[in-house]
Length: 297
Image (cartoon, rainbow, N blue to C red; front, side, top):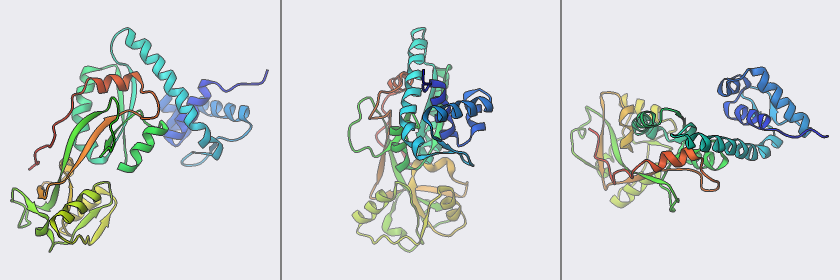
């Protein structure tokens, strides 16, 4: 009888693709690196072609890319079966892979993780930090089980709104406007503006448009920590979400802007496939967040 693909092989493929290496995958699965290598090699023998490029990092071949979504579905389904059985005995168990933007990881997730750990001690939540545009892709391809999405444009059944995160001007504490209760964006026109290339750009541009002010950023910065460091050094000013507050050094402040601008945050499972019982349980225990958080000062 011809050999067949088995679950251990698919689980090894997913683990190596996600971890980027056989050693990291082995640590994640709690098995030896040799076992992971043997499982992937056995899968390749069954399929008659390589599924991974061995390198640093290891990455899927074209065949591996085609197989991965199905492998993820198989792994997720097996985890769901185990979770249902364990919940039958009481309590949420298993692992939930949760993706979120950097500012959400800094300003919102620590409290959620603390509460979840207290309420569900047998459940593990693993956080994946990513850019806004990456999160929905990770969610639908099965790289993660749940995600905090920004500015969802359609209702998502079962999703939990986490509230609206307001845009604030980021200034050095010695800036002339740092002590104000709020700042008209027109008042920033004489400052060099540093623009983060994340998902908040459209909110910032819209605020300037509504104020009738020309928007002409002097610098475009990809990494948020780099942007904060440049404001800290006196290079210029910026606008960013209130949830970035924990990332700031002591001599930088956030001040609300006028006209007000907000991004919405939604915690959800995937739209295109069933949610794991653990994700359903976590989200079901949450209540919608406040409409608009107050300004951090």
